[in-house]
Image (cartoon, rainbow, N blue to C red; front, side, top):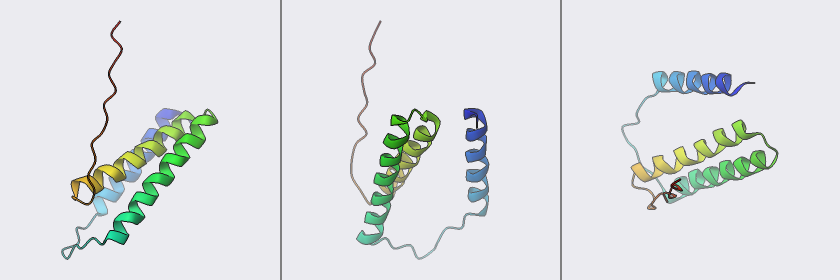
Length: 92
């Protein structure tokens, strides 16, 4: 599958999920729930490394994007604290 088709597939899936999404009024987040999401993020990072090493870069990119999305969501909810490290660009 081309990278363009893969991106389109993920966009359709995300669009559908967003259109069907319902916000839960009585939101409570337990430490165990946060740990489960962190474990999922770790698994996606592991998958990204696995696919990168096999030169399946589009799958690796999708996996690391899922990892970052989960971490961002936890951060936005105030469930975790961390800072993204920005790598400096090499000036030519």
